[in-house]
Image (cartoon, rainbow, N blue to C red; front, top):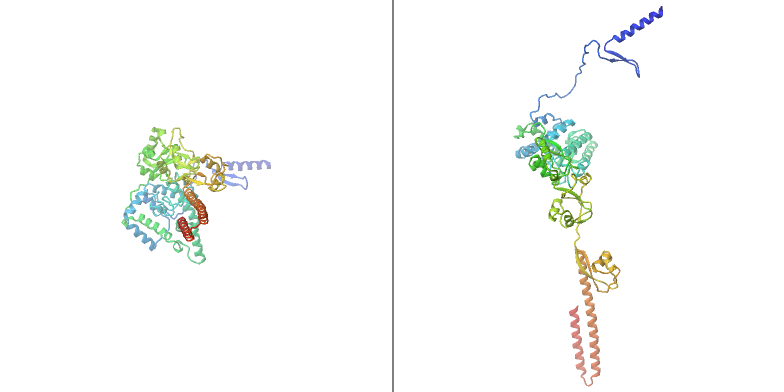
Length: 531
């Protein structure tokens, strides 16, 4: 009977486990652990509440405008020194300058703030283009930094900003902003301090790192204000701080900020065909200068779709552009295309091949006078019927233009030397014998007589030198010829005088001597004239 009792007890325990709400057991890979399950009674278990600790209080009110949104995102430590106050005075004394650059910023500022917030970066950085370029995407510094974020060519390439004859992405609104924030994030990661990151953005990360190391070795502070740096970098953060203070309290500085709504200014629109800049602006129904301000990276009057697959348009004009684009004749979208020079040629020959006026060809492609276009150069030329809808990406992305001085040939006649052959004369002027033979309708191995005239076509300077050499050699030959002739005449005269004197009986010797002296004097005079 005992085994029946044990069996009944086991069954009771098993039934109790099945009926217990909210728990189960897990035994795989270790000891049994309770697992929460839904209760079977129809009631929900209480939701655990944990307190979230944060140093910031979330402001639930909607920002009044974009300036208010920027102020709420300020997160960098303030710099407060005499340099900041000096910069505040400079900006406050130029309200017209503040108005121009803040008005210019309305196209780009919302996008920058959005990107900063997505990366959880301080919104003060949205004000940095005020310091760098006054928000002018076409700005170029004396050191060749370009765009509103002022990227140097090498730094731009490092951050994948394409630069060629058709476009410069250092000026591109989306590309340059992405690259600038990537760079600033990297610098902040290196130095752990936003002020030092900004100093490195201006002065170079290597210079800041060395300045920090010098101060560490000298037992000095390593903050922004402690480092020895150039005057431009010394004033860089104070300029940003001054602008930040003006944005925070415009009334304190007598400044008026334009009303910039907290909403996107532009939208992106995809393009699949090459399109002239002027046509794109027309289809979007915006002013040409406004279109260029939103799409400032294009260096030519055409946008190549494979290199720039989208354009920026004012928000309300994006849908209008797409509507007008559908109704427009695709064959009339682009009047320009790209042509790769198959060989090195004079610009006039290249212009002739593509059917352009020489001056127009040089102007649209930026070709100086007296320059040849090198093989492989990519040039902007009129679009012909049957051209592809979009130039190939490898042509657009790798477009380059190289020149070499145009060699202008001048016809010159040279004289053969003693024992010269046509091949030897051609080699003297670094010319192929066959080419010289063709110019003179002779055989390349022909022998030449001394003094024989040979026609050459030489670069201007070489032609002038050859002509000068020919003149000098000709003068020398004339002197030799004159000298030989006079010598022969002189000998003949002497022989005649001697014979006459010896053959004349009864002639006065004094008279003969006088005659000889007179002849000698006359001959001497002739010799002086020749020299």
